[in-house]
Length: 534
Image (cartoon, rainbow, N blue to C red; front, side, top):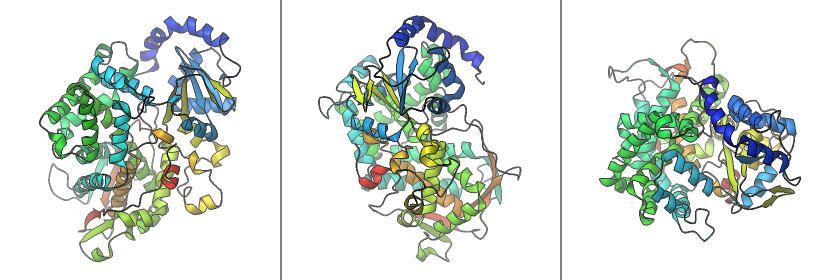
């Protein structure tokens, strides 16, 4: 059942009515002249709530154009929000990661979203921001994740496991399970197919041979939970108002609890082992470890699926671009497999010889990313000339930066935008303006795994298959107004039905991807080039 503005109206009224009088007075008369300027609002506080409900991730873009300031204040019921609109201030904010902190926000979000017990909340709250050193669940989890996801043997092992599963899925793409026989073409919903296959491939790579998501009912329950995140976040008594997503979350958590009890994590990736061991060391209750794993899976899947979906759609939309990228990928086929039935794509060569593929991928992320880096102001702090008050939130929406024409010129989709020659011609801004994975201390540690997964799938897909809309006409991209609250990449409001066939000249070929140990990475953010995380 779809939800209209009318359905949510009573909830918004209940959420606003109580505190509105107090906070209206406080924000109208308590705004310090040293703080960032106030965003325009026809009805203080309420205008911004309405604007966010109507325009979602584009609302900050609209406000930034109206106020034309590097940072502005957006008061909300019960919360003052500062919104940064220029990369220079973002760089300053990232350097002040103790006073402008992310871990406390993540802890609160996790507590609400996965429903941690009071005991677990108390454990998570200990030294959550690292003020007393690198100990405690929060700080140790960050370190464990970075170690497992940094380019090296552990990440290579996880990528290899993922590639095996992706290869199986693509091999069966033109062999529907209903018949078991090869077909010349197949019609399917692209997003649904990608979600199903990436869920299996990613979770098997992470959780190993006893992967809880091998049970289709568990996988389906995860996506039902993910689809109801907003109702869990804003609902009063979510066990009642968000009954279905909470029940789905419980189902996935119970599967994880069984997984840990039988020792499934012993055969998992270094990433899963590291996270689990940190929680054991900090005496996290097993039930809460299972719930935490449900939340951790959000980070593994929620943005990878739509990112891959958009990359494929954008590439197949332009036949000339598709052919150029196919030429790049064809050049990465192992010479020893040329002329044989088994074609092997070398991932090391893919990283060296596919600049247009990488540029198109980055441009899709610039064009489709909607994530926002969020910080809590831990004490009165100056950001450049502006005073930020303790208790407020600082938000740095990537879409504001990515759609700023003063930085990028035109902001239409241009797949060559990130080629080296474009940077030399100064036709794009500094690398720090690309914010698809955040930046600084909270730069997404999983960006290498996600990028390897997406580009490997794209390389295999374009090398093997032709794809067109089922009606044979022009590509029509879905709207994105209902994108999930936890997503950093736009999600489609509806699926795109496509017809897939074997690429001309590839009939009878078998395909594989080889990933040998290498220090080469897809350099996609500034930190990958300079090796720094401020």
